[in-house]
Image (cartoon, rainbow, N blue to C red; front, side, top):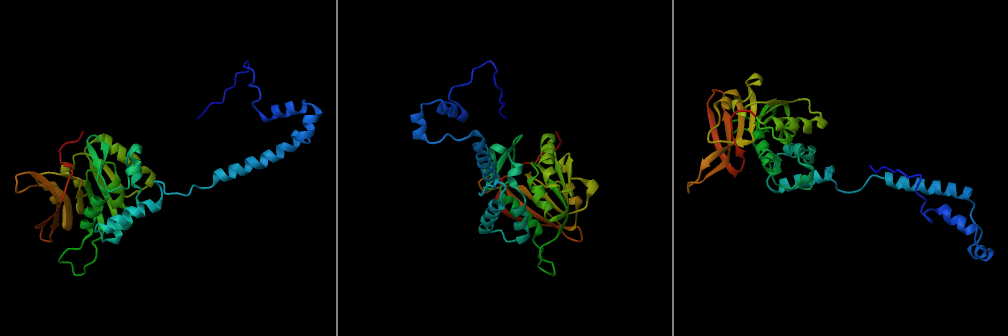
Length: 293
């Protein structure tokens, strides 16, 4: 905001305003007045100026036409690219289209919010690529091979390990009845709460704690999704997964050349309590760590 402070002791700049020009014109020789025509009356000029200013205000009030970060068309363009990359589930596509991803990244990176890239969110953590978020949630919703009807699995109570900035929790909340999200880093937990507040998603519960322990108080969960990967899936996650539930998480895997990478692991918990695991494409997530800071 600019402060318009005038110095009463400073002389006015000569020839700075329109009335000053009228004064000089009125004092000019009659020949100048003849060439210039009749001098407008100041009282007549005021209504004209008010009309002009009102018109300028009206033009400024017109909503800008464009594709800003808050435009639904920008998110729909992102979803279209996700479809082209293989996203099939229309419910997941709709959820991705409804969540404004630019609200969850630093303002300096907002122009990259809808690109298919991970972005830093501080403390060595990142917001996952939109394609990875969509893929993992689609795997959560995919029907099991033994399902009598091959319809998408409903998401009722979901546990998210690693809240981060809160973006994936917001997408999950478009599909699930309840989302419990746990974050071990207190500054990120607080940041996620701040990011999610404008969306008023009352069925998200944010927990600050050790994600490797899950959150037994709200168990069992029919879906668990993790945004960090380790060499093993913690027993607590499998214990808190309900029979018939599914877990999707990155898991470390040793390649043929001895290098260690990560792949998406899907775990289905059968009604008898046994589990079935399937491995999918390679991914890159931050390492899974214990404790809370």
